[in-house]
Length: 196
Image (spheres, rainbow, N blue to C red):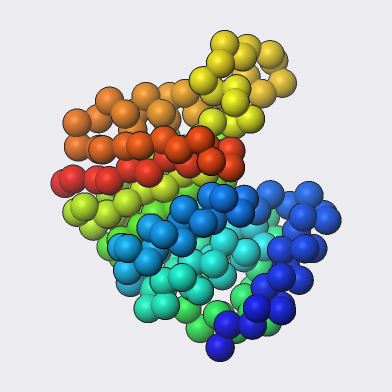
């Protein structure tokens, strides 16, 4: 049973502690996608405190969610949170570096959600394509990154993240097997359908 009260507490605490969680308008779109696609298996790269995985469990009622988190403390917090929210039986939290964990996975996923280190989005994409079912969706959050990605932004501080996200967008828009739309909601959400 989904515990709305605990869910709201997790959201509030994440916002207060500046832990990046999925924005409301992005979540609204993802809810639409989940209700339309009715996935049975979702892969999330970047668990943080388990907020988005809990959202997926809520809106895709039959889905099992595998999610990967590098930060051990956050992952432990996520384990407690999904338990309190009442969705732990459908969420499998893996702790470690996604670039090392992904190659060991062999499940087929209906949806892959990328929301982790911006510099690794292209690696996550390659693994996502390998693991996704034909006609599945790869979603990536924050692809417009504060508007920097589509502007001529070149400041040193965020330059690497911006460059990697530009490369990611190039890959998802130029690969003939991928059909992509990029929405200017939240911090940019890309929706890529994969034909194998």
